[in-house]
Image 1 (cartoon, rainbow over the protein chains, first blue to last red):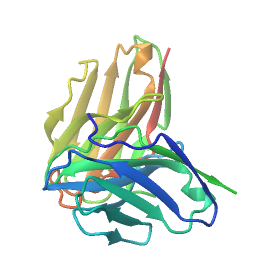
Image 2 (image 1 turned 180 degrees about the vertical axis):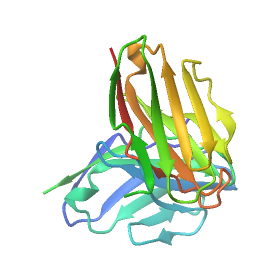
Image 3 (image 1 turned 90 degrees about the vertical axis):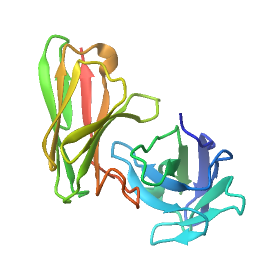
Image 4 (image 1 turned 120 degrees about the vertical axis):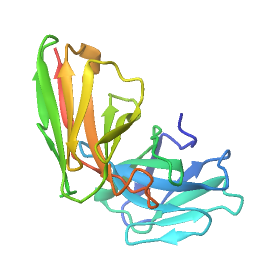
Length: 110
Length: 115
């Protein structure tokens, strides 16, 4: 079972920041938070991951609360190409399983 | 181009047919995976291979038979499937099974329809 809870869908206006929340209240101290996205008819794509500290790369930023029970993926300037299902995944590092939940379907509105 | 190539992209087969899905990765990775994605359901992990050795088999019916002849190739042999097996079958690879980055590289998937 997925260890995360995400809203089923969200809308965001093009050019605005998209903030996707994820709850992982049962996360343990050595589990990482990963984000993937799946654009329609394609395989999932890795976005970012983190343990405790906030992380940023060329695609997105990941903000993890101090108690680590929730996190937010931020797409700073959403475009129509960011329309996809976004998956938040909790994974024990060096574990061989990445378990996907239902994710959040993000619609970017023109 | 993700470095993971799946063929065929689309497959229609009858319940008595035997067919195979092929996956090839050009990334030099040591681990490969099969996932199944049915309509309106989350991705389900089916099989995990590490250095050509199966390390995970998530209670998948025997009508699905994986084969990993080397670390670059992964097959899923299909035999006497049921209509409910119709789904998108996704192959993925990672540097190692216990990869520190946890980054999976997915192919585009093979869309299977069982009549």
